[in-house]
Amino acid sequence: MDDMELLREYALHDSETAFETILNRHVNLVYSAALRQVRDPVLAKEVTQSVFIILARKARSLRSGTVLSGWLYRTARFAANRALRTESRRREHEREAAQMQTEPSHSIWEQLAPVLDEAMAHLSDIDRNAVLLRYFENKTSKDVGAALGVNEAAAQKRVARATEKLRVFFSKRGLVLPALALTTALSAHAVQAAPAGMVSATAIGTGATVPSTASLAKATLKLIAWTKLKTAALIAVGLLLAAGTATITLVAMTSPPDPIYQGRPLSSWLQQLDDGYREQGVQLPWGAWPAQVQRSAQQAQAADAVLQIGTNALPYLLHAMTREDSTFKSKLNQLLSKDPSRSSNAARHRQSTLALDVLGPVAKPAIPKLTQALHAVTSSKEAAIALAATGPDGWAVLSREISSTNEAAIACSIWALGSHHVTVPETIPSLMVAVTNNIPLGIGALSAWALAEIGQNREQVVPLLITGLKSSEYDLRWSCARALGKLGPNARIAVPALIDALQDRTSKVRNNAAEALWQIDSTAATQAGVTAPIPDPVLPMTKLLN
Image 1 (cartoon, rainbow, N blue to C red):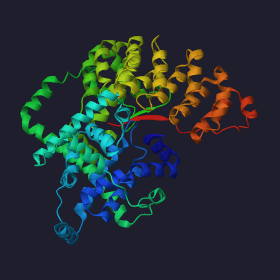
Image 2 (image 1 turned 180 degrees about the vertical axis):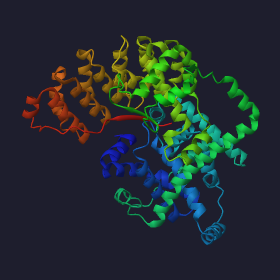
Image 3 (image 1 turned 90 degrees about the horizontal axis):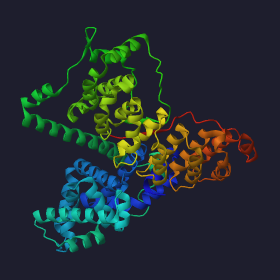
Image 4 (image 1 turned 90 degrees about the vertical axis):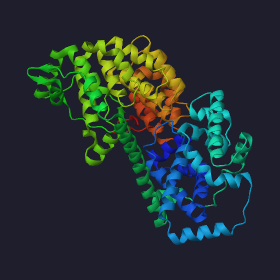
């Protein structure tokens, strides 16, 4: 299993074995990064423990496709910075005195090590991940490409560019190195073995760590959050200082008019239409979209007003759906509000989406703009909903986007087609390819669900789902089992494969296979010794993080 499969196994089933495997893979990397920065083996142990505590806490929220070694490396830097800040003055003086007494060495590595992590911090995430995978973990270019989602040649170019950036950084610090000397030093010395038994999955899972480690983990989480907010604040202030009043003028000039109906602006009708649904992040629940929404009398009145305004509402709605407050303002709203989903961004997006869904085919002139909005993670779900409501022209756009390279557009397009139960000729083939390729990770599982929801081309879909039961990705296996159950007796040829899946190493796959057997052929399920399962009340969900 790869890193993210192991992490999902830990998050879903509290598997100490899965977490222990992650520890064994990455503890040397984290410990070495910590040791270079804190220069104290004891303190480096605390930093390493805190990093894996943070990983355990965030296991459920890390998105698919995360390069775990890159995430751990960056978190180790935050934790090390926090550890150094909280060190006592006495200990700092002792460390400095010990360093002064050490006989100086002029080897390349000893000159490189003190500034290596600062240099790595200046790289972009993808460049840093490339260097970590290639030289810290000594993976092949092919493996680096697989982790980054590119081919081997592109991975080699990425690594070369990132290495050159490091070399330029070191040269500005007075350390001039040929590229070969730099990469040789990194491969040989960047990762050193952590002390045996230093970090235990059991200790992390139960919280049985020393108080200073737990405090360090908590402080590091706060530092990460504060760093993101501070960066956003500096960017926002810089833009305001640079633009001055021109920013205000630009907004006033580009904001479309707020159409009036019965003496009330559209924005007022949108507030009345608001269904009050709250979500944080982009959540794609695996369920049917409520085509006939049960609206209150006031909401029905607002929906009628939107229909009366018609296409005149489109400029305002598109602007509201795609407009974003500054990052600083959004973060500030979230800090000040007890309910972050009530922020101006969330309210605008939610209300404009409801209105576009009400308009349905009337919104067809907006399809080009909606297609653009589909590629932004902050508006991808809203655009997908609106496109699905426009009819076959919108469905065709969503079907084409399944083969795009934009992760948000791919996921939201698949979800919209499946939740609305809509299809055009190219929909099913595109979804089947997505199941087979499963790129990016998790898309195959979502596509399997969508195929079952749409329920067409069963003679082709059922064999594909049977093949998916043997996938190395456990989320695809359980999704295919669930999808076969959704198809019911029409998937009868899947019974032998589902019986085999009852022996799967993952309990969720076994449970879904058992439930599918009962949905398809209860007699076969009984003969296989399967008792009537209790359906899982939790609706699966795909979540895209902003």
